[in-house]
Length: 316
Image (cartoon, rainbow, N blue to C red; front, side):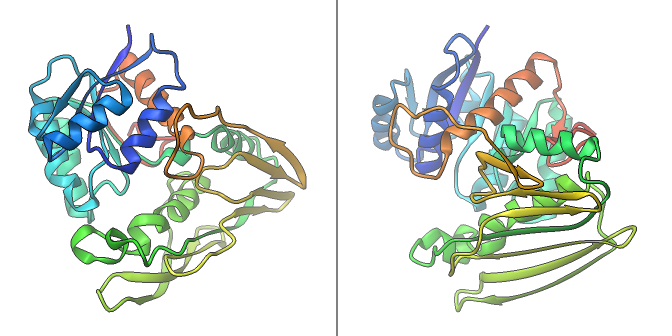
């Protein structure tokens, strides 16, 4: 039986998510409805993608009994409100990153998923790329010995994009792109909490962070450092340095298609999109969609976040 998707939000990321879903077998993934704040926009979006039903409110998705799981692709500041509404209606949810605006809001979402006994996962798509799966395997096998230093960089000029620079829309480097650097570090250290965190950054006049550098100290004298910026292009790669070698994920580290292990390179190509994409390598969103399907098939109706024993998502 196919996993039936509802799409909450008709913006650029929802467009790419749908294009990615269509690279998967139609007998396993189907899109049955889309909702936007404006019915005309939802209808246009539905026609573009061949979706059967279009709704002019997010609330309408809560009443659609044909939906197995809802992909939430709305503004950061709407994640809590929309997420709670869907979870309280007992809908399974895949919520775009960041989960919410702060840890208090995240805990509200988690509590709602547990109370309703439904599935909730943050859409950190990087975790499900074949490159990330291979990195986890290499770390488990101690291919590069003990990890001593991890580096991750992500910088992309985005000051011209209103939602990235305005506090009211959840802008700033940390929430938009810094999360990719930090999740990578969390993955490498298998969810271990750092012993110390040192961070410094600069803010725009609007009050959101423009650029930031972070150093994290872990047990056994292990370090991680990352930098991210919405005003400048950075190397956009990631490196894991161990006592027996190095793993490097070339740019773009947040949606990787290649991997270097002690200078030996492997390629992991993505399927070609059938329609234009808005963001780099967006057909890679297919991997998180398939993870959701597998979780639902296994009955994992529990909160699933960034880190678990398998480093791909959380089942604790």
